[in-house]
Length: 70
Image 1 (cartoon, rainbow, N blue to C red):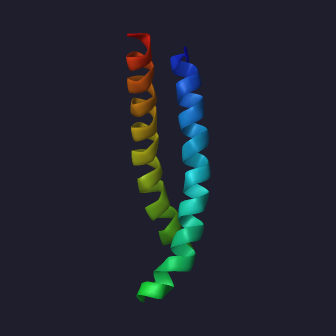
Image 2 (image 1 turned 45 degrees about the vertical axis):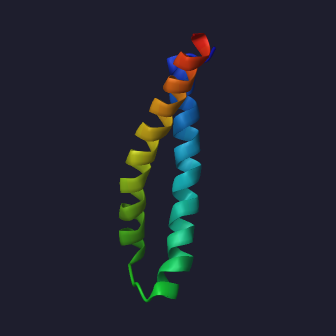
């Protein structure tokens, strides 16, 4: 069984790595679609998705933990 604290640590680690991957992907992909954004805009867009991803990851982990206990 995973504690809530460990679920949060796992979720945060997953999201931070995902954030870096997302920003690097945006930097590579946006120009292919003719989109232009400054680095601070890429970072801000990434932060929005980081927040959503953190909540999603934590809730899914807790859901699976609850399912495993049954």
